[in-house]
Image 1 (tube, rainbow over the protein chains, first blue to last red):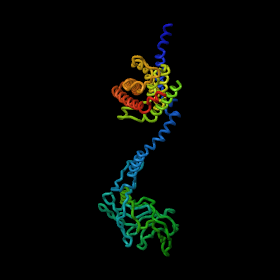
Image 2: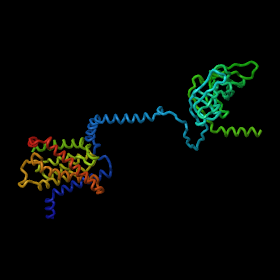
Image 3: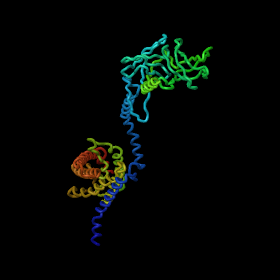
Image 4: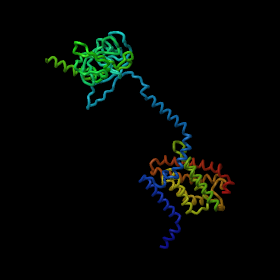
Length: 277
Length: 175
């Protein structure tokens, strides 16, 4: 016992050292194993405040670099903007959605030539066979119905607009659902006629006219125009309806060509039904 | 005595702040050489400091540095080792007739060659202990050793510079 005490006294410094060292290892172990905010780390208030002061000073030195970084990032983001891209080719990426089947596909095109002063007016658009345009595809734009594709070349297509006397389309009055034939009488490019609407149907000026979607060319419900005048022709069973067209054909620049992907199927079925009769 | 306490406290604050706010961000050769100049506080403690006090001071100094670097215990352990070895080493490199009273382990008091030997060995011990504790394995032994040696050289250079710049003989005599 006496020897042991003597040993302790003799080696007190070394034992003190060992004790503190054990404490260090305990702290290291505890800090590593629990990863919790212990009372001695830089999240404590004093050191945290010091680091805040430090960053307040050093961030001024960093400003130039941060600026460079930000402008580089800006440049990168600007390059990703849609406006910096020009459509070279409108090949659409098809996503195979098994829940719905796509019926209509739109291709945007630019009107490169148009006439408005003839009875048979035509538009020419800058998309053709190469972009998948085919005859009898519908042509629309945000203002409403434009026309239908007539002929197609490699890179261009001609469009019969509403303001062509050969143009006909089935259109319906949105409010009542009664339909008629949309035709242009060659008179005023702002107005067209809706024919074959029976006299008993309630039509008022201000009614909205939309496509009926019967001919498998246009989707249903594309805006055509607004009824501007309803006249009753004596001795006729039909209304004489004048429609103010949604499109101003002197200003049509951009259009979308509508491809009906189920058109063939619909036409084949209808033909078969007619043959059976 | 009071002067000793004041000057050592001042040095403690100065070196801790210098290390924590500036030197910790400093490194050479992609992090191979990091200066840990704050141990100058321990290296400059009076020669006749009681050993128990030296251990306590070393432990506290390391722990405060740990707070800055979020490495609780590692610096404390290394500084503790340094504080334990320093008196022993001081004794072994003492002049033939011992240290004079009031003599300080600095270049102005002891000369350049003595100081290089003194600081070099102790810094290397501290840094080796520190880096191996930090890595906590013997994998990449030579890389860690290389880091310790390069960092020691860096620290020693700064330590010598500090002696010449900040602590002239007059100032240290007064302190």
